[in-house]
Image (cartoon, rainbow, N blue to C red; front, side):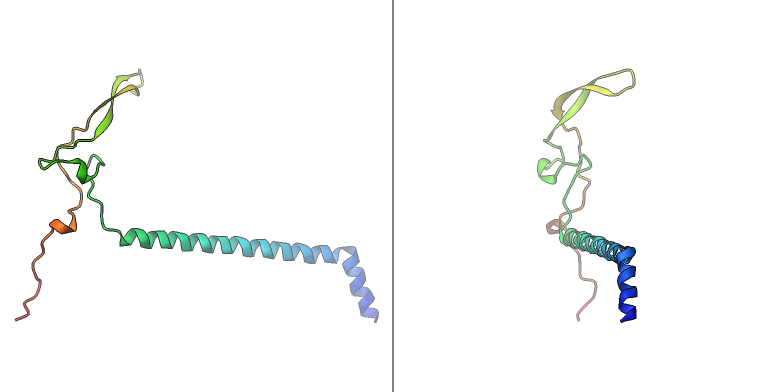
Length: 121
């Protein structure tokens, strides 16, 4: 019975606040770790989805292959600077046709032919 009063006095003088603070800190740390794990899982899922996509055929001008004709000319409209300031920063832009001439992106898989590596004979 004597120990009961000692423990009770310790809690009355601030021991309970210490315990509550430690519990609050532990719960906050647990929440932060849980949020970091969820973010890591999300980033991993996005990376796996990106890895499963086929490469996009993109020209050096950053336009899709569908915007180019058979000769390799791009038909997309771009903004070209027409006036500059004293620091050589563009002030005005005009719409113009993209002047790239050749597709330099990855080959679409439907156009790639690979011969057999081994003979099955």
